[in-house]
Length: 427
Image 1 (cartoon, rainbow, N blue to C red):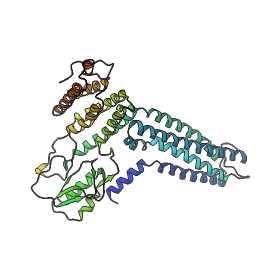
Image 2 (cartoon, helix red, strand yellow):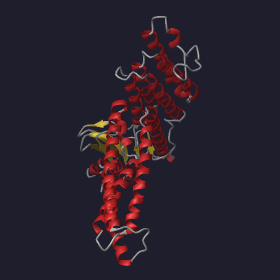
Image 3 (tube, rainbow, N blue to C red):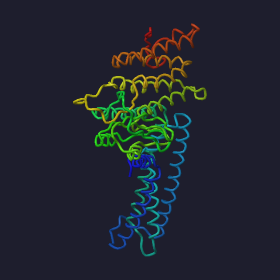
Image 4 (cartoon, rainbow, N blue to C red):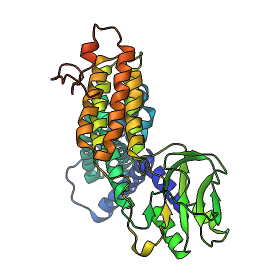
């Protein structure tokens, strides 16, 4: 099985809402049937005694209750989906439907239903699975408690700031993972300059967004074949069918085309797995949704800027273009395309500045964030921050030419409005 197929299977399993509940349903039916058989064959001591009619009534009630509760969980899930796509960002759903609490709740509910139904089939006039009935009742209690936890969890996650925090944490973890991978002497992100033509040009066998690629596998292949593989697109780029994915330098066979093509996973949309910028894209989308005339919630955009600032601080204090030292001038095995500090900063700031130009608190919070970044990021990164501050000044002068509120919008405020403002923004 190819690496890209394994990656897609893993993504499908992680994003599936039916796989774990299906496993719970099968497991519940098997355990229910087995428990009844064991109790009948071995005369297991009962926790409590039930008459056949009582056991049938109790199990029937449990089956009906768990079926109704499962339907209610699904209804809540659909409402959350509608809320998330209409208020936050449809791209956030890639994180939301992977939530383990949601899947565990559905699995326990469906498992309790099939467990109880399997016991119900074993109830006869001369035999009652008493222990199983007691366990079924206990599972109902567990299901109710789990449902309350599920409900509490997702009610709290309906807040835009909670969504932004989750996305920001996922993006920062991905950034750390990618930085750790870049420390390998076999991988570089420096421009690869050579006078020779590539021995092999690898073309995409389909269309889609680059979700991830097998860096370790490509490095092993390149070292084994004394070659250098140069990626032509960054993770997150959409490539059409037949587009150039890689240039390979060295003596390689045409048969390598298929293997190298399968080392890149394409999908319908981007993922955060190897693309921390996608997390920033989601956060910016949440802010833009809040700044739309239909919502008009600039305070939400200010809260998004809080977490964007923390993510930018992590990136800005990291050496992104650190040269990789190689002994004896050995060429790298893999050359990848990565984003520069300017790319991350522009992604986080540009659209919020554009669409939030009419909000005093958004502009004040944006200025405070940029002032903080200018003081804390690495010196080579401060030039880009200063440029963004100049763009912010130009936006203020153009949009707020009338002097009534010009003094308010030109200062920095960590809370947007109401916080201790810092007068005399950087120019």
